[in-house]
Image (cartoon, rainbow, N blue to C red; front, side, top):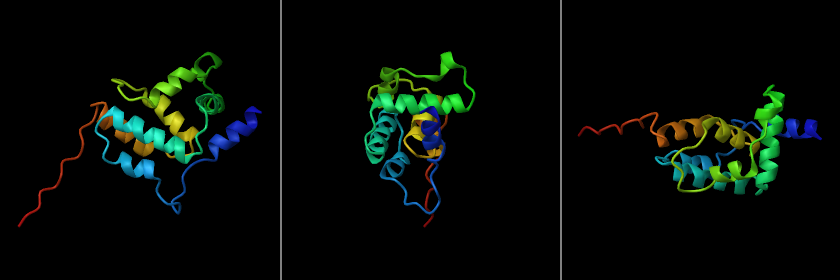
Length: 131
């Protein structure tokens, strides 16, 4: 059973020829963790609304495939759920990345949005137009 979960998680990378998801499109303007959580909920919906337990199992399987020790690989269902909840002041970027992968998306834009939303990076300034 773990093998099939790992295969499903590993094979879910986005392809360049696939249309961009609505979740990722909305993520571009994310300035707060609330927006990141809202986009994550949209991504979950796009992935067919898997349960938080299913997402936690997929994360665990992917971490096992990466060699993460057993005692560190399985996030709690509530911990996974909390990533989708508004009102957070912090969010673990590694867990966010694992959840995004478990939902079939590329974590790169999510990591960037997390960095901006958590204040560890500054958004790029808008370019002023010259007249």
